[in-house]
Length: 117
Image 1 (tube, rainbow, N blue to C red):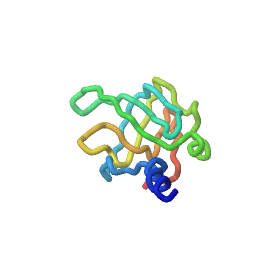
Image 2: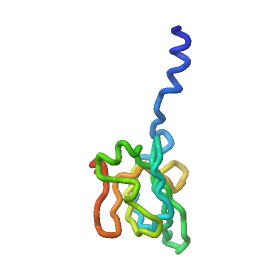
Image 3: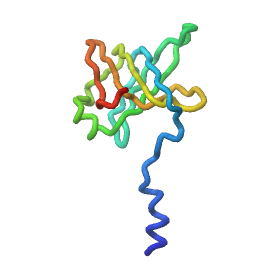
Image 4: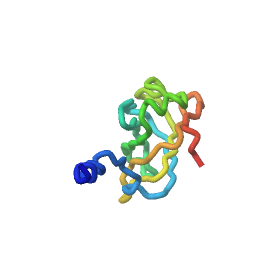
């Protein structure tokens, strides 16, 4: 029984932020998709780089069951919305992904889980 528990423990362990740097970035862009899914939700959006190149970003957020407690819903974002996204911990190697801290919607509403610095 002890062996079974020891071998099963990693299955239940939650992944951490080891793949991310501790860096904050704020990006203005246009929503392409809002994936309201478990175990994490994803805000996908396109933004222009300084050189004018359009790049795709992915912001990872918490599960819907957590987000709803902060007023964030399946209808909070729709394709075409202009948003300003502040993310923490951009992925190592310059990949354009991060953990969402807050999003400012087209009407100026700030959506966050109260964890932004």
